[in-house]
Length: 232
Image (cartoon, rainbow, N blue to C red; front, side):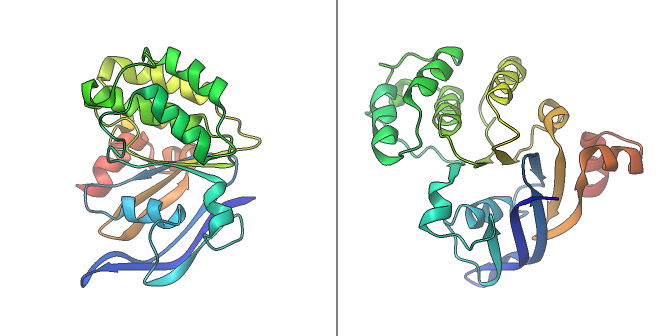
């Protein structure tokens, strides 16, 4: 199995509170990997550690065999859960900013995804709903031509009716031969059919991890139902 990200004994503490407790995880390359867990389980901390935005208290993270640095950051597109845009900027201005910051940003692809998302380039961030901002974040992330895409709650705020259509469209842009996607989500029902590999995280510890089809066969239930059982 080719590995995209390997996490070894990863520990992270914030002011005495332990977010991750010696976690060991291997994310296979060329797969869509789901990170599932309740609020406060350590999902965001793990994703930020992979993206090189958080420095571990202990253990290590290897992205394509290397510790997070400037090189691995350039190979990783990170979608944060928070809204990180300037409110007065238009979507076009945000796209211009991303194009200036990232050599691997595909402007043409971004404009195509923007149209698919039903977003107008001249719309200003301050006038967008939370769901629309979520669509902007997805557009910018998927327009990066990078081997690793890391997304923290990418469906947050997006209305239920639109989720399936958006997911289908975005996954169609995904190149399994060149890319790996790692995403955390609470919206398991809509996303689980796309998962190749799944990690269940609770209170900073791995509860279960494995290939989605193997977990379904072993436990005789869907990933959604398995999550209910694991976290009840």
